Image (cartoon, rainbow, N blue to C red; front, side):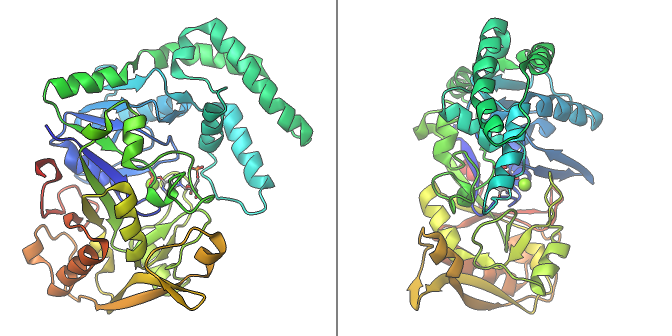
Length: 428
Ligand code: IMO
Ligand code: MG
């Protein structure tokens, strides 16, 4: 049985949750492999809105959810989210959620470091301040705490000592308040049972699912342009957001990751700092923000808005091995007289069909646009390609030609069923 992985093809907030929700109908298992509660995945079903951060979006359909070892897991945030889901009528129990015992824990100390680092940076990144970056730093620094440590109080206590010794030296050196272990350890011991009831061997679960002929859907967080290796470094998140991250972040073999769906909006947004060549200040940018409700799910921050950057998309397709695209929020372009798509950049008088890595080059890149005709008949709520205005279809074909891969799914409103399926990724 083929698996599918859903990755963000831009700078995040492309509507991955919506696409995962749609695809989850045909999946047995939905697995998260990277990021933490910096993600904000929204789905709307029958007018009811579900905002997920750590839980795989498949839980809303009652599918088995897995949180892989590659996720940075804030135990408090997880428990709060499970409660919020319960209030919406979605029961999350050990029958439908498993957390990798080896997932990295995000602790209060990481939030404190995230805030301090952002204040100290000459050029802030504009992080979500959730402590995600510092938790991954500790993982790579080999001093991180993991879910399985919650089951071993002596190990937990020793590791917390070492962690705080390391970080308090930094806090002290900067004249900042240090953190004490006692309350932190006790709180972790108090909530340990509530977390450990979900802990298990995710890689084995995936192996069993494969052996039983079940389908797994991997739900990426963030996006290619926020990837630690492939994004506009240092304005990135701290994890591997690409399909390779699905393998290292869950224990599935790279050869079993399956069909890769890259999710892109019909325009572009970015939240936080960093290069964004097609950003529009004012005018149509404001219109896109208002019409697209472009405000962070988690942080409420207004997102920067601009035209679709097909040069960037082409690069994402290549480095993430995207097989087909899910094009979201097509309806937000309804009523624009013309639509611009960036096909490359001019930097120092030279044309580039990709973004060179240098920050100064990226910041000075002038987008080269192709102008396409807009459409006056709305696409909102359209459920078939044939029913789209010809100009909207021409826009889709143009994006396909630029990106070099076909569009498999188009969404025309936040509602689950306002979805056009050109080809089913699970049948690919
Ligand atoms: P989803 O999964 C959009 C951005 C932050 C910041 C940078 C680093 O909903 O698409 P971090 O807190 O991760 O260290 O912040 O990455 N960022 C996101 N932007 N969508 C997200 O997730 C994001 N997660 C992180 O704004 O620029
Ligand atoms: Mg989001």
